[in-house]
Image (cartoon, rainbow, N blue to C red; front, side, top):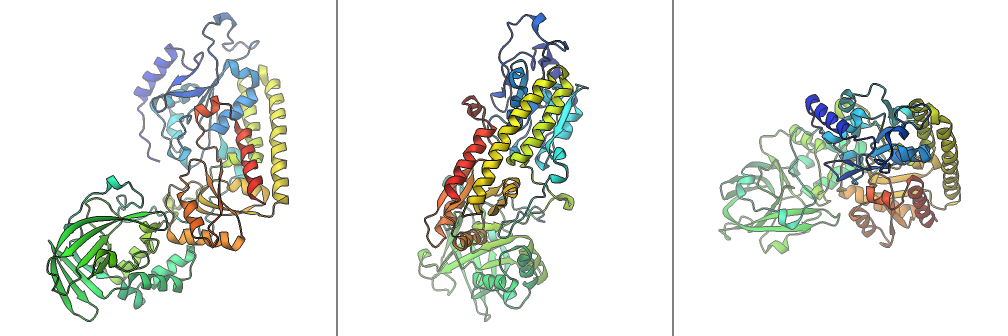
Length: 555
């Protein structure tokens, strides 16, 4: 995560200012530039005489300042504090609904953490910023809870299931301007100079075995064999042309038999292609000036970009009749690479940057492989979605509260006992539901943050992406694989998480045999807002809603 390090001087000024205004001790809410107000559970007690406030008085309730990153932590703290919460400040940093994986702390957030009594955070890859925050701490008695550390050996590695789309983070060149979803008004006109240069077709390389190593690489983690990948690319790459040379507005085509044709071309605009996978492409169209030259009359380029930019490869489709006469653009995507690349370099490019053009060319659905910096293994952060884990984590929270406020320790322990009984009851209900269910596999057209949950109850799953994925567009292969699993398993529901646009799930349904499956939402508790909290939702109520959804869809 990109995080802009805050200077000690800036942070110190803010901490002093907050201290002078009593921030974190007797205010109802704390200002956060990123979201009007962080949620705080404390009522306004500014009218309470100073002598009745428990400023560290062991005979009184001790006023605690607690900062939590995610909603489950916040709600667990409130449950364990019970009535003592009225005297404490509990800050929920992500109260504006931002996802944990996208959160970046503000200067004000850092200051709240620096002076709090108890700081609770998840501790996964999304919390890399925490090290800097804790380095600025000014409270020497601060207690800190890292949920992943509490989990210990029970923390699970992120799982890349069969058919799941991988993320590719180690490209040698920048594809940041390549897009697969966009609004119409984002597309800009482009000139032929974006594709200027000499280009070679990938088709003969696919035929002669030069790309076999790339196909074998894909087969290691993909859903097809190396031969199936080869057949698939041969079909997509097929073209009558081996080489294309573009200079200014002039294009020279060299056919497989050595025949050369050429013409000047005029730009006629772009066409926005909506693919069956739910992704889109801008097709840039050019028309031959000399229609008797023998060169293709109507051509369109597509390179996954929607604004002026030098292409690193491209797909070209053509017709002598009209643009509308271009044959099967979804399954035929002749692809050209820079002519200076050796066959081995083209193979490496294909292995490292999976352009699944069938899925409308990867942007048609690019397949991204899941790599992490320095080869480090990434752990699944979504520990809160297990009720068993919740009980363990609440115990740790209780232990820290007892250290901070020993005078109320018995109350905290009693509240934990009562809350743990509620967690156990819902946990038992989930197990009974799964035990009696006729369906024991979930198909997710989305990220899958429920690894801990399904493992608790012996459920299986298939999903488009891992739980922490930043991907939002599924490749054609992933869509077809998941649709095939729906057919194979006979499931009647495709699941998503909250706030999903359900585009992937709908596309999966459209590609099944029956095309009539339901789409249901399971809440991963990652985007709970302050408004929802004000309306009365809590951890148990959201997990109960998940129970109700599964009860409707597992039979």
